[in-house]
Image 1 (spheres, one colour):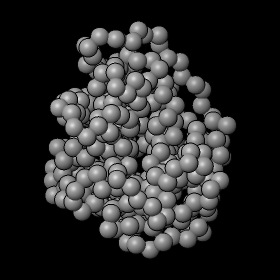
Image 2 (cartoon, helix red, strand yellow):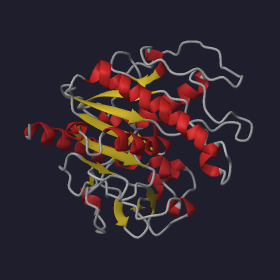
Image 3 (tube, helix red, strand yellow):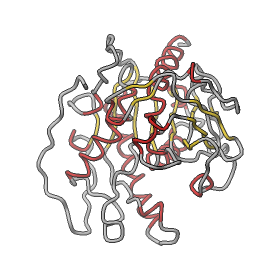
Image 4 (cartoon, helix red, strand yellow):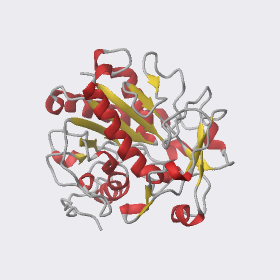
Length: 329
């Protein structure tokens, strides 16, 4: 059971024409998660004993694609005023992913005119780049607004999943890589999208649980399985094991798995999952019992479980890295 009240959603019309209003980040409605309002990022799973709230750090979280309906007919970018879509985002990634950071961080997650799922499925279309550029422009504006109005010198975690990670890589390149802001970076959790080893000039991939000013990344697959998405981007792809927090090829044992959570944080499971980095393809091979993964459907690409499978491992790691950042100041 979750110890958080369900937020209410303001009734707004869905815009059906081709015009999509730009976001206004002075308006809390254009944030999926924000410390100044009650939202699903405040939720704490019932099996976690809440301690004292420590908000000395911030996480800027970029949510994944939730805009999937009407594959061929839908506009390339989502409306910020699509109430059903916003609820899908909030009950999906904000509840299941962004909450992992709330023990030590204030959570900021902007709504943005995300690109439709078809942007990543259709092989050739001239509008794909425009859709992604529009989505990133919103993320960029949100980050600048956050830095100007909310950050006030706090250390930062950048976190994302899937489409969100694609935008996060670009954000990191523009604002963190080799800049003074890099020293404020606790860690970037760039999950569910390939990160090439040469994407950053000055930010290194993490290879220990306590490393800071770095990034970690993984994409989860059933042990021994791969697919076309694994090789979707050319180049050497990096990967970190979110149980050991190393990028070596050692298969972790179930004894060191701190735990995952089922969808909607309804139930935890510990000492269940094993993981191993496949360095050749830059993916994470995962062994998990059928009872653990069947809730994602009959799939071998565990993309939708990238956070859930390692929820308690990530939550603990955030605390370790944040403590390490402050100990060095």
